[in-house]
Image 1 (tube, rainbow, N blue to C red):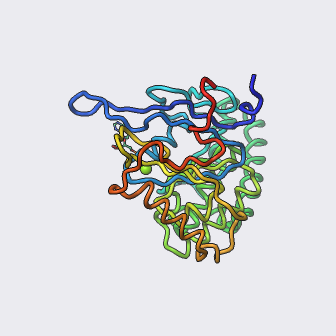
Image 2 (image 1 turned 90 degrees about the vertical axis):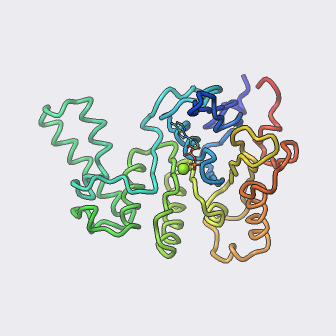
Length: 300
Ligand SMILES: Nc1ncnc2c1ncn2[C@@H]1O[C@H](COP(=O)(O)OP(=O)(O)O)[C@@H](O)[C@H]1O
Ligand SMILES: [Mg+2]
């Protein structure tokens, strides 16, 4: 057995997704996605609207199955959702009738009490106290200790999104999936949140998959970028057309955004993935990453 392969957290093995369309033909969404991810990577994903970014996240979450191919996590094919994988969406997934603390501890409670049964009172109370303490620690960590008893409507957009992230992180997931999480925030809040998520990622050592429509955000945040696109010659569904390690420290100083290297990478991503006029040939794809599928040995 190849041990190098065992060290991978995620392996997308010839993953293919298609949906029946109105004429009962199959519309291909993802075409043969092959890639591997190591634990602790921060992967940012950009691509034209509708190309299949959310579909890819749903596959990793286990909320959807590939039409062909396999999603493998820690050596096991994914069969469904798991507490090891959390997701944060653009629209805050908080319950309006629960306080911030109740929202944050919701997952812990659901998990424990569905096993224990709500009516085993002493154990319920003890657990509740334990969860609240843990919830308060997380609130401290996200800088919202004073907001424990507030309701979501009392919070700003950025605060709500912090709570949503804490709600996912408190379950200590191995993988955190984020689907345009900062898309609804204003510019200043967005910059704050970019620093915030990098701090959390460093502390928690979670592997993050982060979809954004903002190329600059993608290059600024990630340790590796995927450009998913259906703009290539003979296209039949989206492929990863760029797979690159992003150089530099994490988090990066803000000045990075003004360097020539950064500007050139921005332009390359625009051209290779987002410009419908620029149709690459498959063999010209820039798959320079160590795990790029063109470099995989056959029959692995
Ligand atoms: N359950 C579904 N049935 C049919 N088509 C779907 C389904 N889910 C997504 N699609 C289609 O798949 C494509 C990719 O969708 P999505 O992953 O949401 O793209 P993105 O997140 O990149 O904007 C879109 O054309 C969308 O209409
Ligand atoms: Mg989407």
